[in-house]
Image 1 (cartoon, helix red, strand yellow):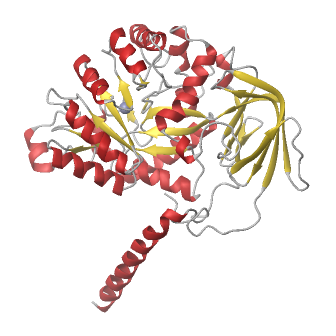
Image 2 (cartoon, helix red, strand yellow):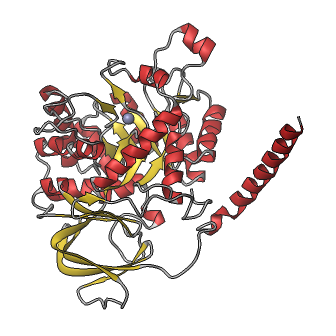
Image 3 (spheres, helix red, strand yellow):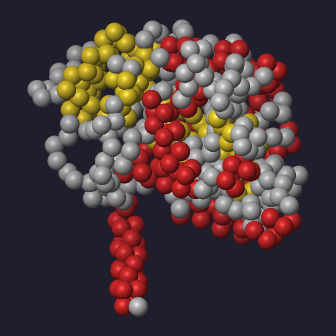
Length: 459
Ligand SMILES: [Zn+2]
């Protein structure tokens, strides 16, 4: 009993300390040890700016700590700086998957690719550990940002972001949405027993029908660490109205978050466009006329373009996705690279019979972009610039290779402005100034830490 009392008191003190920590969290690094910052000078054979489609030869990128300090052909390399020679390679900013679910992996066996069963069988802790592995696999393929938009159990996505930000493990910058907010039922079709007796929709979906419930749901997600808000706009015939969507946008904005919406109908797409949504996800039914409206309003498209491969998909499915993507691109929609790559099968092997990892499976969505006939430089822009804007990371000075920005970059052989397949062969990855991959090999020995080395308040 006494033990219990002591424990209760300790928890109460911890809770108060937690509140105090939150108050000070606005200030920045939150307890990270200060000291001299590591200097790294990168010699880039070519440095690509995907925004303009230009490349500059023989550039030196000086990185101090986590950020880029100087860029140019004649940058003086300070004594003591580590020099990384990428003079044979092309340096590009890191890639973005604008729509994925890192803590979801549904399978053919045993659940017949029905993620409703995955959710019942795999606990949130197991899924969080899968997410940590998936995140490193994505970073290895050059993805330095990933929008992790729901279907992640009970906030495995915001925990993943926190673990990476605090320095426990390396990984992309995660833009987590927390729970997907939806009208009654989410994307599930549960039985009355499971719905009424077991509240089975939660936590895979957070239901909100009325305006009060919408406000509360958005605030809960923001409270638990969401950096974007994901809604199921028209998953059921009783989806959200234009006024509902505008309320989501306004409430999310209070927490600095943008709204991404699952959109599967033409009518739903029109409501999303009329409300001025930030990112439309999927959008298979969008007409060319609606694409023109999206372009005019700068609404990003994350169309999750599943390719036809020897291990997954269908020729018909890829054609549908490619036609849709091509229409959007032709109308000037800011298209992003997005995948929904959240499944696994025993077929996921390359032609040598080796397992493909989640990063390789993700970048292989390029097949659809090539089938759509989208030029390499525009595909690279979708993978980078448009992705940073959709993920809304510019405000945190993240994305492009620019002075003052976080040092996130990738190096590849060849020229991705003319041959997009060059981005498949990532030789070098730097994230926040730390080298994660060098000479094509991932090295995490210096990037795994026994504590929150970047500061425990970093979220
Ligand atoms: Zn999805």
